[in-house]
Length: 502
Image (tube, rainbow, N blue to C red; front, side, top):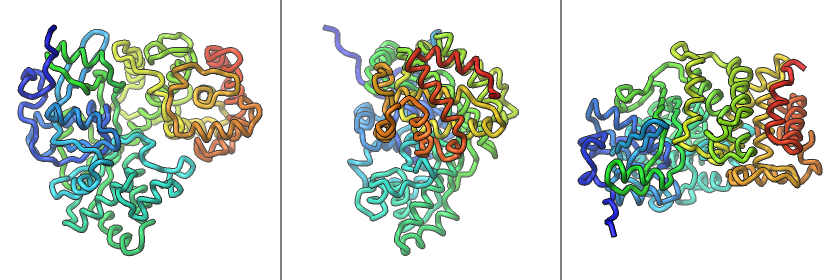
């Protein structure tokens, strides 16, 4: 019987595969959210930066609950492989920038110590939109969430991302009060400003003595730069584990697949230094918002539409979905008709080239990004992507048919009308609003009719603005009915053929 390849270790990994010949020994960054995206994006950019300059910029990776990746990386001496794949090529690298890993629920005090450590200069986050515990209706901290209330009371250990941040910053100010930067790398509009607001709202809800101790220091010593991140990173499967074994001759239990494309745009507002990320391809700008909206709407918004239509059409992956002519046509219409007119495109971006890149990325059959993965957490994601561009058109007297189609397809996936089966890929989508939507549907005997769509918009799921436009709810209802009666292709055709001015 042949021996299995050795585990991924620096001693056994070919030198050419290592991004860094001398991985950092000191921790300067604590990262919350040890998922695939961080390991294929920020860690890779940091490794690229450290090829050009030394510095104490090792990363302590912190998982919130699951120990799988943290333990595997410890077993593999803090290494793992990134498998960049396209239909034409496979490239395997080993970033090797992590100095340690831990699980917040297992070692909460160690996490707070790490956030407070004098050497920690940057705290970064990839905890998904859902991880910020904000209210979909107000965008502010959701003070009704039991975990938030427990963190405010000081029940130990803190359970929410914002609670952990604030408790770590409190420990920091009591120890030495050195400045620090909190950098969100999640798909939130104005993610730095949003994180700052949530941290301040949590602080303002603390007892007076704690609040008065922390507030002035937050204002003067902590920065929250905005950032935009962009890379498609699907889930790990045995296919990628086999690719690592083939390319490196080692066994890696937690490799990360990723597309070749990667983009990172940030404000250069760091209170205590940072790696030379620009040497690793990152872009620094005074105004992240145009890049952020370009990505949130053109990439993420259209990606959601492709995922929901694809799942309803029985397509397991995004490339499978994009290969369907009616879905590709719907995506192009969403891009050109509904999203692009709402944007100010950065001067260094050619929109036609950017859109061409998007379709190349979505069509990457080697990547196989699953529709159920892209479609999960839609109740949080769509609020960042649909309402503002929809209101832009509605206020001008135009109906954004493909934004209505996005909402209709989402609701059919996550809250299917009675008697309608959305298929296994839609059923597998995770969404925190499933129970809420089921309750709304239960109160409306015709869950595909206007009362259901109106009730969904009235619930604040997509913010408050759309409730003032009942014609949008009516259009969503029409498209739900078409999906249920005739399938997603019929709904997409109707969205394409109906004039924007009604």
